Image 1 (cartoon, helix red, strand yellow):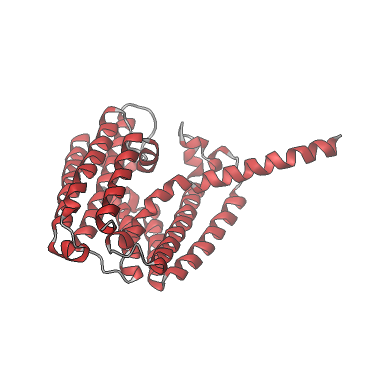
Image 2: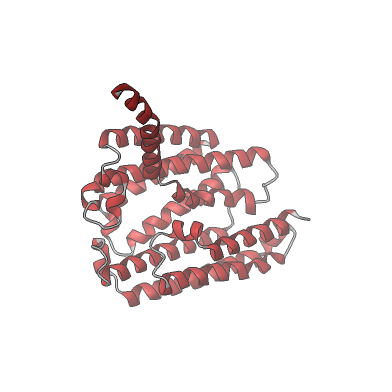
Length: 306
């Protein structure tokens, strides 16, 4: 009887273990890696099957590597996470995944991630390795340095953008790079604003770096970066180089979708106490999803429809 019970439990137990390992990897965060597709989309290379395939390899490589970084960070933070009302539910903090299993998972993800990044190009591999290095220095102490902490986060996004452009042999637009930097800084400061609001309201203990921020300071930085996103993207759509490469001056008509997405995100940040996890907001909010889908559809139609 005990043997049959054991066999019955084997299947569900394995499924539970697999589910917990997937939770530890945080696959919903992989949406951040869509930055690597900017090159093939805006470089007019979406019809080049080889480049699209290499961009997809860069996406997968960054996704696996970023998951490995999350696993490593959760390993080092698991004791502190157990004191947090939300983070205590993470697999390592909750004890649903053991430390040895997490170490094996991180090693496996790093191995496959670097191999797949190398298949995209040696430059993509270099960007992935630099991403790991930046995250290591961030976790080692730079996350406690005010303002630099957000710039470190933005650097990770810029590496994705560069991997999908220069890393694949596609010359990046300077305006597009600047816009990408402003988007990542905007999301970083918005994340800190949400964390600070939660801390002020006493919902949970906060990051040490939040002691150096104030709501007014973060609001000013959010306003500056949000405005810069709109300006740099608008200037990109009207740039003579953009018009020459794509043969259209109609990309300016995609700006309203960008504006709506920014305003909706700010609404969630200030009225719905959202914004602490930008990836979750992007994949869960129907309004942002609709705006992003329409922006992508209109952009693709303008660039490739003719």
